[in-house]
Length: 248
Image 1 (cartoon, one colour):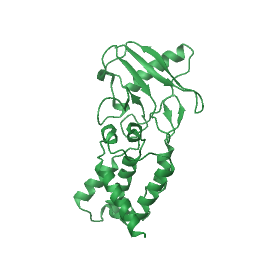
Image 2 (cartoon, rainbow, N blue to C red; image 1 turned 90 degrees about the vertical axis):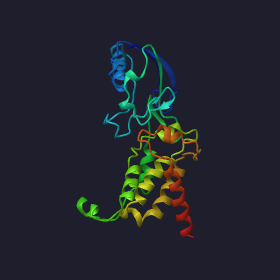
Image 3 (cartoon, rainbow, N blue to C red; image 1 turned 30 degrees about the horizontal axis):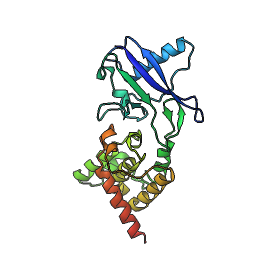
Image 4 (cartoon, rainbow, N blue to C red; image 1 turned 45 degrees about the vertical axis):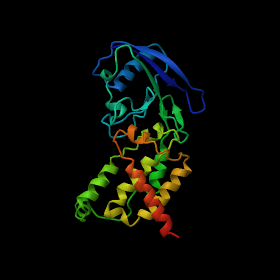
């Protein structure tokens, strides 16, 4: 398969970026999107050009590093799929493919397709943890909890913090990410005692990082590779309102 790629190139955070067109040939349909980019990078290195910088790690849809906008969609055209799980058979031979980094003020570009997502780390540091000592895993699992609560916590815990929700939102809102992290712990016995302080601190950190407000258009849910539901945003709002009222 042959493709024409339009790739965002930017030498550094302060450099001016631009779209650059490349051609790749004889790509196997079973190649992943990153294997296709590896072929392109090999071509660039052989010709004396700088390789395109992009981020990847586990290549199993777990780490959330593969943050690419492909033809204007976070992680590409398939729902519930990360970029590293995207294969070239999803495209047609001869297709033009546009590849860009996440676009958000809170995710500044480091180089080419790599952005700084440490804003998510700082939000997690503000409250995305459980302070109570439950001992080892068997002790923690011995605390009674209903299956419904456990399932809800696990649904929220699937968030891998990739930032697709932010990149797909026209306001660059991080509400779905924060909602998933707040809800995950709010449904566990271990996280219950800190739930009020947690939601206040995490929302404050989110606002401080410069993320926008929720647009209520559900683009975040559509782009999420783990299909996190926007119902968690409603839960975040309830948690936040309750925390504010009870702290008066």
